[in-house]
Amino acid sequence: MLLLILRLFMLFNEVSPNLLFPFCSDNTNYTSNSTFENNLERVLEALPSNTSDTGFYSTSIGDGADQVYGRALCRGDVNTSLCRSCIENASQDIMNLCKTEESIVWYDLCQVQYSFQNSSLMVYTGKYPESNKQETNISHPDHFNDVLTFLMNNISTEAASLSKIMFGFGEIKFNKKETIYGLVQCSRDISGSNCQTCLDSALGDLKACCYSRTGGTVLSRNCNVRFQMYHFYNASNSPLIYPRSAGDKWSSGILVAVICATALVLALLIGTSVVYCRWKKRTQKGMFCYSRCLLSLYGWIAEPFWVLPYYHLNDLFLAMPRSYEEISQKALLYELASPRGVTITQEGELVTSQEFPFLDLPTIREATDDFSDSNRLGQGGFGTVYKGVLADGKEVAVKRLSRRSWQDPEKRPQLDWKTCSEIISGIARGLLYLHEDSRLKIIHRDLKPSNVLLDQDMVAKISDFGMARIFCENQNSANTKRVVGTYGYMAPEYAMEGLFSVKSDVFSFGVIILEILCGKKNSGFYLTEHAQTLLAYAWRLWKEGKELEIVDPCLLESCSTPEINRCIHVGLLCVQEDPADRPTISDIVVVLGSDTHTIALPEPRRPASSVGRVVAVDQSSTRDP
Image (cartoon, rainbow, N blue to C red):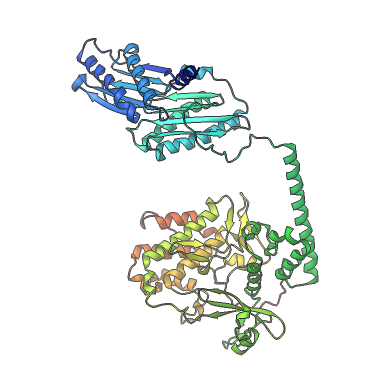
């Protein structure tokens, strides 16, 4: 009995190779007992023993018109004995089936081919075995084709790029009961790119012949592809997961749960909106008080959504990870970051508004209890932030500048032109992802140097999305009654009319470019001897052909004049007053990454007037949305 079981096991594992397709070319037949036939026999005799160890072997014997090129390939999942057995059978069959000077036979486990010229072995020739006709049609063909394409593309990339033996296989669930199994393989004497090209052609033929069926195979000289609805290879792998399994129908229980959850969320949002509107009629304390009220009303259910006082549902998903303590500090600083108006008289004296008074140092010391550690809110790279309470009970946040926060004259030269250029390009690529490459179009609305982080390699990372807005797929612009952001970096249409779009971020990016190039901040430039904004000064020098005068001397020592001129040109294009005149971020990335002479840029128009903290007196009342 034991011997019988062992015998059955051996029969099960030593499966005889199955001939799939013989191909005899239309070339001239070789002559029997000729030198060519003798060389062919020697080539075919050498293939089994040399192929079985590695799974692939190619050789040639003879020279001139009698030279024979031979190649054998075993499937990547078969063992040594099966490989040798398959090559032996294929070598015998190819002699019996074909008498031409070029032939190839495919088995399910191997393939053998010979030719009178080496180049013909590299030509793609897609063939369909007769077994394809036995496959039946599949149900839900559209979804099946999507899942099958996902599977075959993944394993093709694996075979061409990741596998040393250019062999890829995998499986993926089509539905709860059925699984698709796929296999691809390339000949190992071709490059990875040629392998990918061959597989792409084979998959195109496979789609034409066999998609929407329960299986299919395409055979070629350099690659083979196959899929089935059963496990046909001798290997295992973790199943792939299709990103959108639309073929699986939801159960009624799940559907009811989703509907109930959606209704609950809608009711919660409507309820909070009603509470918010009533609250705003009774008080003007703003979003900080409203946030606490929301927490007290809904408890842990509403806690992830308590950042709704940012006024836009689009901001919800970006702000959710913030903690209660972080948001409470942010809210206080946020409220103080929006002064209603500061005027300057003709005599040069500042007149403060009631909402944003100027405080002297003794008042600040008293409000913060002489900068007590108990009032400390946090610490950044340039100083510590303290909470203070004024005599009228109003809470303020005070940032005390660290004595070590000044620019280091020894470290400053490390920011040479190459580093600054890479920082500018890095910010541009980050904006390109937010505006065009991300699944959702994101408008940052507060792009400034302090919101651009640099890692140890000086690679730029855009941060602080607390004021960002998410646009729908076809949405290009929006407006708001409450303008948030940082003065000096806001586009004029946003600061004055509340209109914002991707071109608003482009304006901010242009200001950053000019600040990096000149080494000075736009917000304080009007206090210098130039008596004008940084943007206007840069544009005037550009018109006069003296644009290099605005460049930081530290950069001039290491910069290329055409490159820095191109950056100034791009910066001035970004800060033009009309948003329609500003380039898109994709155009900017192309210009910054191209040769300075390959792309002609338009002449920049006069930049917009800078929107700073010093504004005209506005007697009209303002209210939050």
